[in-house]
Image 1 (cartoon, one colour):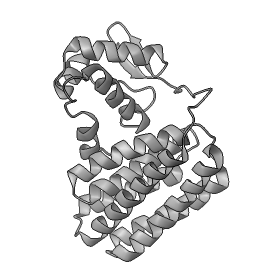
Image 2 (cartoon, rainbow, N blue to C red):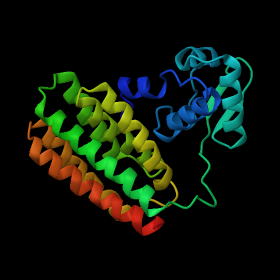
Image 3 (cartoon, rainbow, N blue to C red):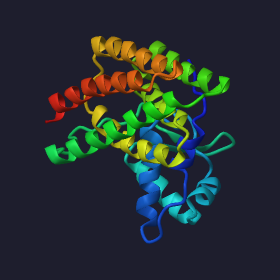
Image 4 (tube, rainbow, N blue to C red):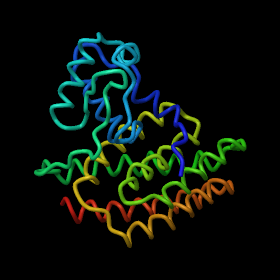
Length: 238
């Protein structure tokens, strides 16, 4: 199993926020960090000082955003020598998830198809060095071996690793934002074991096609994979 770093994903979630809505944007960016598994459950966030620097906001703004998310159950604050701000383990599950309109779902899933198919095609068309190839395969192996508690986080890491392999940093930021919204929906219903087996077989085809330098095969494999998750999302949420 691996938690290989995804540097462009980290840059995307820790980039400066917009002026004017600093508190809201800081809170949203921290939620992205949690939903994407950039910091796994039970692990600590960067310090308030570091977050303030990365988001280009005051420490008071960071502290208030952390307080809001701690009150909501997403973060845990600990004092003392080994203190800090930690991602809750387990994460809270919404008792009454908000209603998702058909228009919103089609917008998010349509964007997902464009972003992820484009990332897979571009990654497969590139000449990846040995390190990039090994990291991408390691992400596939990690999700294939994951237990139920870690599956969705490592699945997210694999999809974002494919976006990173495309070599377009601005694409990674868009893919991360899109995936955070998809994860909000995925986390409202349980994992299905037969679906996990099917997804892992599809993941292998996607990654193998990218590493073999076969863009068309990579696109076909990822679109088939996305169609399966879209069917589940519509079934549970529509």
